[in-house]
Length: 259
Image 1 (cartoon, rainbow, N blue to C red):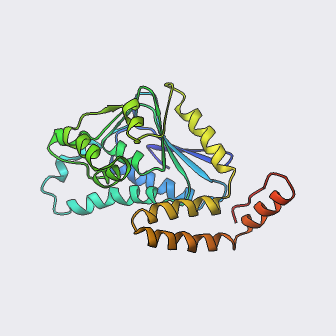
Image 2: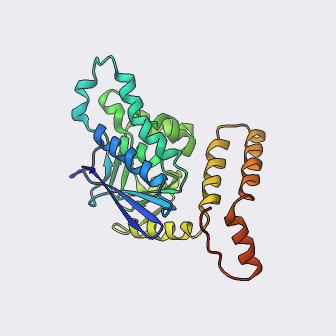
Image 3: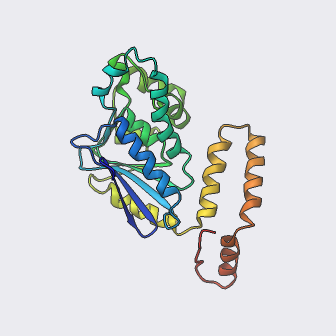
């Protein structure tokens, strides 16, 4: 049984909550439990979209557990320890279902990197977001130096990491780090509404949209177009495309089975 992660399901939506008060800091155990939770949700045929949030209203996740840092200094297995956290974050990044991070407070360091691994970010208006690692004499080691520039551009990403200063939800929306801001306390409700709209659609198509975008961004345009064509050909072999077309012809809403 998980110690720091809870998973709830509402219809076709799963809600993964970090529950490590007071600030939901990320430890090795938390990363391990996150990985296990997403592995189970990947194979759950009833789940189409996944929300990730933090318990309470103070923090989504206020960074890594600094109490674990002393044992990492001089550790000959340091690189493997870093890779272990990457395993969980990469799994979430490549998860074949839409993911939405609900930033309901402080979103610092590893918490920011977890949010970056999700597809969409919704922020409560009181949220603060940043990568403050430079203030400890280190730098983001959970994919932040790679995912943030891809999202907001090289110059802005470097500014945030060079200074370590947090930004407001409003500034985060302005630079494209979050998709939308909602009044404090309404983030989860807003995310559920968005996830409900998303989960009405075929997971066969949703997963291919995600794959085409994510993999295509790391390829040339020509290679990306070729990938899109291959995935588009695949979708025409699914049961859901048959249902979608038939429903259109019959002027009714489709009932997708995600097959």
